[in-house]
Length: 104
Image: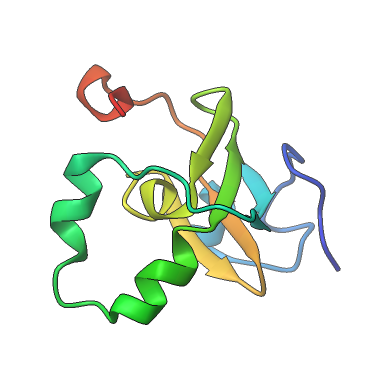
């Protein structure tokens, strides 16, 4: 079952327990035709990953409820709010970000 982006739910009612209760949003990962520009701070952290995998993930975006805009999935992945990605859905804590992370 997929939840539309910006859906707020509690972990207990969704069938989860433990740390999953801190998840506030479930965001659908969408594919775009052209690769999205990834911030330099994220590019530095991609060393050692498969170039084919990185190329594929550069074409994926998420509507970030914290920043209020569309962001590349790779930026979402390295965000402190990222919890997990399951079957094309990102689980996000939804907490406010420090100013340094917003750049990009």
